[in-house]
Image 1 (cartoon, rainbow, N blue to C red):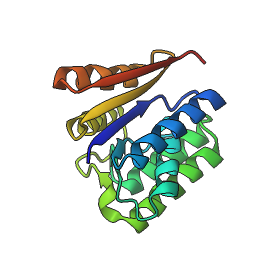
Image 2: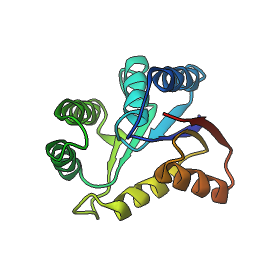
Image 3: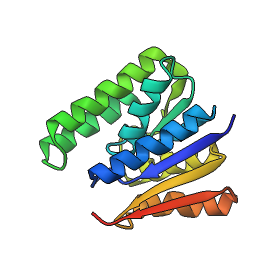
Image 4: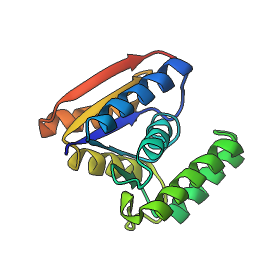
Length: 168
C-alpha cells in the first residue's frame, strides 16, 4: 500500500476543486492505497470526508495536526471569532477530526510539541505529511505558500508530485 499526501489551500474553494479532490481520493482508496493530509479546511476536509465514507474503519487515512487537537480546535474557534472563517466551518472541522480520532485513534497524529498553532507549527506539519508520503498530489489554489512549501519538500524528497493549479 502506498500513502499519498494530499495538499491544498484551506482559504478558497469552489465546486470544481471539491469534485476533483473527491474523484482523486476515490481513485486512491479504490486501488487500495491511503491518504495523508493535514486536517485543515477545504482540500483536507474534502479528502478526509471522502475517505471516511469509503473506509468506515479509517484505516487508509493519516491526518497530521500541527498541535494537539484541543489546541487546534481552540485555534479554529478563535479564527471564527476573528471572522477569518465561519463558526460552522470551525465546528464541522472539529467534529470531523474528533470523529476520526474516535473511529481510529492512530489515524490522528497530533504534534504534542507545539502548544500553539502558528506558522512554524503549520510548516512542521507539512514536513511530517511529506516525510510519510510516497507521493504528493497538490491542489494548488492561487499559488498559496503552504502548498508551495509541500511541493518543494516533496521534490526535495524525490517523490512523485502531481500539481493541479486553480485560480479562485
